[in-house]
Structure formats: structure tokens, C-alpha cells
Amino acid sequence: MNETLGHGLQMVRKKLGFLSARSFYIDLAKRADLSFNYSYYMKIEADQLVPSEKVISQLASLLPGTDGDLIVATYCSLLFPLQMKRLLKTEKEIILPKESNFKKGISKSHIRSYQMELTERQVSIIASTKNHYFLFLILTLSRKGISENELSIYHFEKMEIALKDLCEGKLVYLENDFYYPSYPEFVFPKPETTSLKKIYDKINAYDLDKNKTFGLSKMKRASFFKRISPRQSEIILMHLELLFQTIRTADELDVSYNTEVLSFDLSCYQGKILG
Image (cartoon, rainbow, N blue to C red; front, side, top):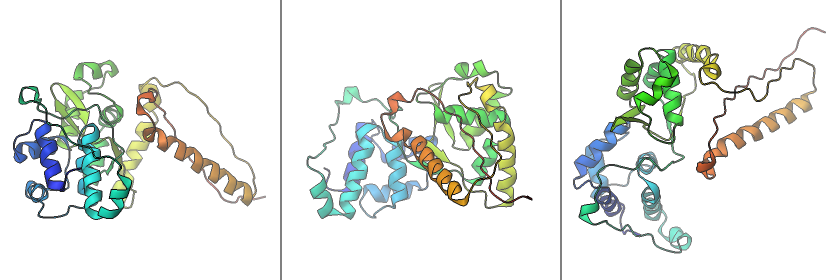
């Protein structure tokens, strides 16, 4: 285990082929909408401040393999030194490769569970057109980089414009002719403003064509409109929550088995009517 967080970041940076902190930060900033600036990052490397959990989560999600795990473990050791000593049975050392093996850039093969909440501006970009929305879905679900030529199988109109807008919004980024998501998983904010509600209305309309556009096969469809007891309502909600948890845990298991895409839409209403 590295003694300090700053030292750990320096070692990871050099391992990835970035000999200067600025070049490393610029690469991260090109790929994602960071919540910290270069000056803040430099203070972390210099051990002049303890970063927030959000900053550490962002950094860990953008680093490959065990490098991100090591940064998180070092951060936790900084906050809880005695507890982490008991938890960590063995130390993980970062081994610097030979200079001839330096390969600038960060591997895209890792997958993290860190979730980035979208800003209203980003949601607005996603909802600009149906093409923007569907391209966003494809690229954020992808487990590898996708080229523009590969995306052409869906026959999106003005695809180049949509891809450019998604890149400018720091939702995806282009590297070596392949598009990657800026974060492993994005979360849409709650519709707490009138403007967001209008944007979501557009997205809901796009969803009507989602399954057809991607050629998804129907697994199950059911519709109910009947009287039930309050107790039955509680049981149904409990079962639904269990179902939601099952879907959410897909990324917590071995993600190499996640070869299928699930399109799941549910609306459940409750109330009283005459009779």
C-alpha cells in the first residue's frame, strides 16, 4: 500500500505513461466532465488536501483495473487508518513497466459501478433528437469502443452532428476513431424543474420506438386493471422492489456475462374509482 494518496496517484499516472500531471489531467478532462480543476488535482498529488469522496470516485472510475481500486483503498486508509490495517491482509504494489513498454492512454476494458448524475444541460443534449438519445444509449451500454462505421448499421440521420454534440457535452469521447462513454454509468436527475419535465416528455416519446429501433425481442407483456386489497398492493410493491434490485445488481457480478440488453418499462398506478 502506498503511504500517501498523492504518491499513489503519481505512481498510477507514470504507470499509464503520463510523465507530467498536466498531460494526465488533460487526458481525463477530454474524456469526462470532471468536478475538479487542474489546480485541485495538483494539490491532491502534492498531499496538500484531502479530496472529497466524489472526486475519488470520479478518479477511480476513470482508471483501469486494480489501479482505481488501489486509489480508493489508499483514500480509505487515509480516513480510517486503523480499520483499514485490519481489513487489508496483503499490500498491493504498483509495478512500473519498463519505459519501452509505456503506452500512453488508459484501458477501456475495466468497468466500474460509479454513477455520474447528468446535468440538466447534458439531459437537454441527449433529448435534442431521437438520434442523440439512441446513440447515447448505445455508447453508454457498450463494453468496448464503437466506431462510426459500426454505428451506421442503425441508419441514424445526421449521426455526425449527434456524435459531436454528445462529445461536447462530455457524455462520450472519441479516441483513435472509436467512441467511448465518459463514465461507466450515468443517472438521470429527478424531474424537479418544469424544464426537466418537458425534456423527459420528449425522451418518453422516443422510448416508444426504442425496442423497434434496436430490434429487441419481446419477452413478456401484461396489463391489469382490477380491484385488489391494500395488503396486496404492499406485496406487489415489495416484489417489484426485489425485481429492481435484481436488475441493478447486474454490474455487481461478473460483467463478462452481461451479453444481453434488457429494455424494461413499468408504470403502476393506484387509486379509487366509482363502484
